[in-house]
Image (cartoon, rainbow, N blue to C red; front, side):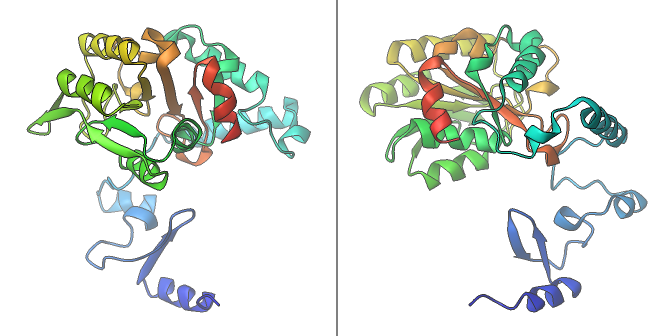
Length: 282
């Protein structure tokens, strides 16, 4: 028998705990103002002149009007009946076509059959790991990398190895000898990268490095997991891995950072040979 919900209610009213749907309930740090983080309120935040950096998300005040306008158009012309039913794994064909068209200026021609709609970028990373890897597989990452990917890897029993060094935590350089050594000796399965606006360092991988990684991926049949969550912030990025080596790349992205975190809408792009396995874990 679980705790009485009334206890949680009283603790929350007393300001002793905070909670977020999907994440759980946490004991509140009394040194942090209640308005910040999970319990932030925009009007209080503005009045105090404080900027909350706990979460990063779009903050355009016009977004609400855009959403309202879009929902009105959907209500008039959309297939509302279908939206009340279970959706095909990977999204409906016309939705995949819309996203592929949207991506054409940045990624080139993407076939809709190679694009799967996901419930955000984290979901895309999860089905990649659970669909394509086995417990004990080895995946390379940066010395500092996205904590969400580390959590998914740990949940599935994936071993992570680092293949670069950091220069005062402001720049990261791939150690190509270390990468190749892991490919030869440890049968490295994949490398997880955030080449555009790396999280948390914020750097953009130069084109020469991308080509070197591409060469190694072809030589050792290495899979590249390209996380492009912040790529939209870079006006003129070097070519993406999905453009350079599409047969060895899983490209994961979402609309959480550039449109709205609450939509939970993302996508991944994968070669034909992986689509069925990814759909099975979708």
